[in-house]
Image (cartoon, rainbow, N blue to C red):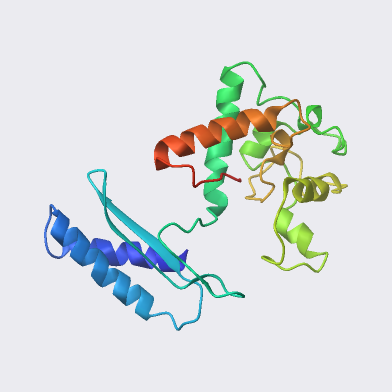
Length: 222
C-alpha cells in the first residue's frame, strides 16, 4: 500500500510540475519516471506492485515490478490480481443496502436472524451496527491472533471468519455505544447458509466489478 501510494504521489508531482492539463506523452513520461524511482527503491527479491495509468478512458501505461509470490519467485505482471483489503467493505455495504431496497433483508434485522449460532449478548445486535462498526464485536484479526497464527500465514475463508465470530462470548461494548473499526468481513450476511444472501451479494459485487474493470479478473471479499 505504501509503494502504491508513493507511486501515485510521484506521478502527480511529475505531471503538475510540467503542465496543468497533461497530454498523453506527459502522462506516460511522468508515469515512467515515477515507476523507475519506486521500483529502484526496493531491493530485490521482494514484493512489489503492478501499476496502471489511464487517460480519458484509455490505458496508457502498464508495468509491474517485484514478486507476487516469494517462495516460487513468481513475478508481478500488469495482470496480477492483488487483494484489495478493506476497500471491499464498501462493496459489501452497498450490496446490503440494495438488497434492502429489493425487500430481501432489512439492515435493522438482528444478526442472529442469519447467524443463529451467534451468542445472545443481551442487547440487540443488528446488521446496521456491523455496517457502522458499532457492533461491539471484537476485532477478527486480534482474536485470531490469540491462536498463534500470524497475519498472512493462511488463506482466509468465510468458514474461518464465521467460526471466530460465533466463539465470541461477550462484546467489547454495548452495540451502538461507540465506533470501532473491526475486521469481521460482514460475514453476518454473506455466509452461504444464511437465506441465500451470500449468492445475492456476490452476484451484485461481481456484476459491478466486471462493469468497472471490463473483465473477469476480480474478486470482492470484505
